[in-house]
Image 1: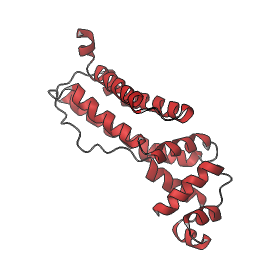
Image 2: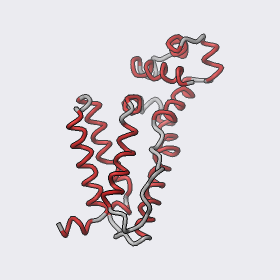
Image 3: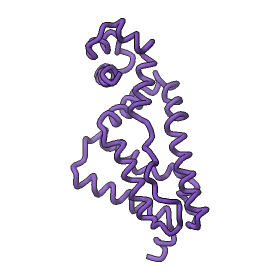
Image 4: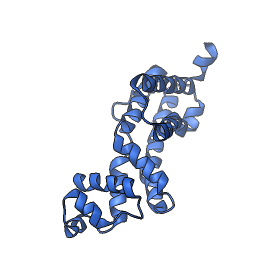
Length: 194
C-alpha cells in the first residue's frame, strides 16, 4: 500500500490529478493495472488514501497536563513540536500543494479532509485549551479560536511551497516566534505584565 501511495503522490504532483491515469500509478509502483485495482477501485480512492496518510492530524499524545500551574511556554513548546513535526515530512507539504492545485477537481475529497482530519484536530485542541481554562488558566483568544494556533504554520508552509525550504536557522527562528506567539495568546496577562 505504501509503495502504491508513494507512486501515486509522484504521479499526481508531476501530472496533476486530471492527467494521472491508474495504469501510470501501477507502472510506477511496479504493479499490473489489475494489481492496483485489487487495492483501489478508482483514482479518487487513491487520492483519498493519500489524504488519510499524508495529512493526518498530529497526535496529542504527551500533551502537558491541563493544569494552570503548567507554564504556557511548556504547552506552546509541546504544540509547536507536534505541528512542525507533521510538516517536516516532505510528502505532507507536497500533498498540501496538490490539494491547492487540484481543489476544483477534488473538492469533495477536500471536504472529507476538512471533516475527518482538520475538524477533529481543532476539536481536540479546543478541548485541551478548555481543560486548561477549567483548571484555572486565564481564558484567551486562543481558547475561543484554537485555529489561530495553526495560522503561523500555514503561513510557513505556503512560503516554503513558493520560495523553497528554509535553512535550519530560519526554521528555528520561525518555530521560536510561533512558540512566543502561542505563549502570548495562551496567557495575555504575561504580555501585558512584560
